[in-house]
Length: 170
Image 1 (cartoon, one colour):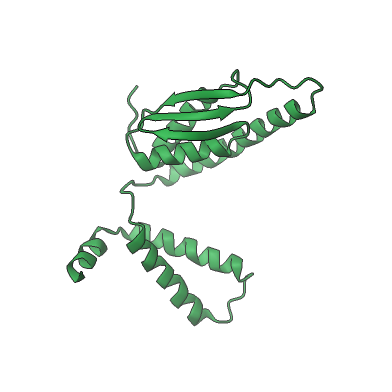
Image 2 (cartoon, one colour):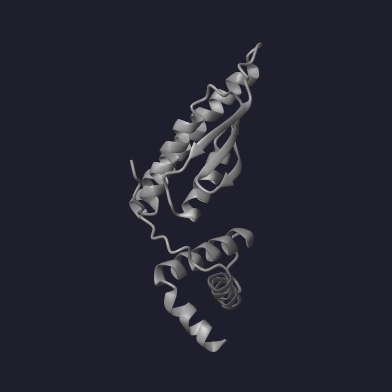
């Protein structure tokens, strides 16, 4: 048991530990509404949560690119606004353009965690819901089969590849 814990600790990157610590600290700050009176307790709780997460949810092994994330965020927000406007226009139109159905997308990414990230991102895009992720196939339900959901998934996949420093075959 002790040897397993040692080997796990050796595989944890300091960047991963720091990111998780920061995430738990921000979460604590938000939940405590900015109250820092019990900073000793906060430090113990945040450190314990970080250690527990590192043991229970090991890193995926993917490296992150800060520049990739910085490029992804405006892309995601822009697509969300455009998609939301499209869905809103469909909802207020007297005869909405709806042709619900399923769209298939074949991943080029090999890393399962990156595929899951793409599928979850597509579910956050208005008018699109990921319903099945199996192997290299993603099935999405869309409000209108004429929507460019597969093209959007391809763009998301390209951004995710940059975020996690992964190569995409053409």
